[in-house]
Structure formats: C-alpha cells, structure tokens
Image (cartoon, rainbow, N blue to C red; front, side, top):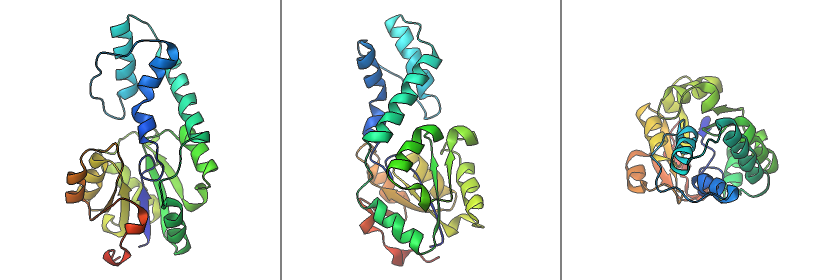
Amino acid sequence: MKYAIFDFDGTLVDSMVMWRSVGKTFLNQQGYPPLKFTKQSSNDTWEQDFLAAVNEQLGLNITYEYFFNWFSEYVKEQYSIHIPLKDTAYNFLETLYNNGVKMCICSSTHREMMQPALDRLNLSGFFEFTCHCNEFGKEKNDSSIFIHCMEKLGASCPDEVCVFEDAFYAANTARNAGFYTVGIYDITEHKIEQMKEICHQYITDYTQFDFEKVKF
C-alpha cells in the first residue's frame, strides 16, 4: 500500500454519537423543548434544516450566525477535551507512516473544528494534508473529492489508493469510483450489511486489517 485516504469522524475518532446529538444538546443548553420531528438532511444542509425546524416549530428567530457560532465552539470544545481515538487507530497510522504510506484526511468536518483533535491526539504528523468538504465544495456523495485527494497524494488512479470510511454513502461513492474501500464499524451506522457487501474489507478495529489482501 502506498496511499490512503481516511475519513475522520467515526473512522479515526469516536465522535459520531456527539455529532448525532448536537441538535438535542443545543436545545437543552438553550432551555428549549425538543422538536417534534426533523427532516432527513444531507451533511451539507443539516445545519440550515435543523435551524429552520427550530424556528418554525418553536416560533423563534434564531439567526444562522448565532447557531453556527454556538455549534462551532461546542464542537471545538468536544474535540479539544473529550473525543477519543478509535481503538487501535493510532498504532495503525503509525505502522502505515513508518512504511512510507502517504495519507490524508477527507472529512465533512470544518478545518477549524477538527484541528483541536488533531493537535490533542498527535495525529497531524501522519498526514500530508486534510481535505474538507465545505472548502472543496462537494460532499462525499460526489467522487470528485476522492479523486482530488488521490491526485494531491500523488497517486495516478483510484485502484492504487485505500479509502477508509465508516459511512455507507461515502464508502459506496469511493467503491463505485474504483478505490480499494475499507469499511470501519461505527455504532451510528445502521447499513452494516450493505457496508460488508460493497467494501473490499470490513473491520471493527484496525488490527483486523489484512495487508495480504492489498495487492498494490
């Protein structure tokens, strides 16, 4: 293996439970009642959709700037203090790095939110760069973000690159684009059987990764 693209949340760090409860935490901290329902949102619209539901259902006029500032500071605090690495992730990254594998992170999380976790967990030195969906302008249901990372790492085609993902939709995008795809178990992903079907390998921790199956 020469190249690897890692997702961050749910793949390298155990943060998805926190992400799934951000809206509830906001309502609790602000003293608001829970929402009756929220629409299913994509990663790039959930903040706006959540805030629209809050304002509509509770008769409020919370601005996006106010919510995003709260949201940003809350997430940065969680990353700075609480969010742990996934079991065996550090040793796996260290092994890859010591064997000359060029690696990057490709994430839906904003750069300024993620950086405190990278610093606290001593991860930055393993990666050539981090790529963020909000900066690139595409989410991971579009293969162009994976292609961008591949080219920036120096690989010439997808089948030279391992993509590590915990989310079915992102793993499916990578697999369909021709990447060697590794699914990582996370408690918040419910499409586990589908993940097992589409991934070249599916693992619950990094000690299960089979290097013998990687022929490039």
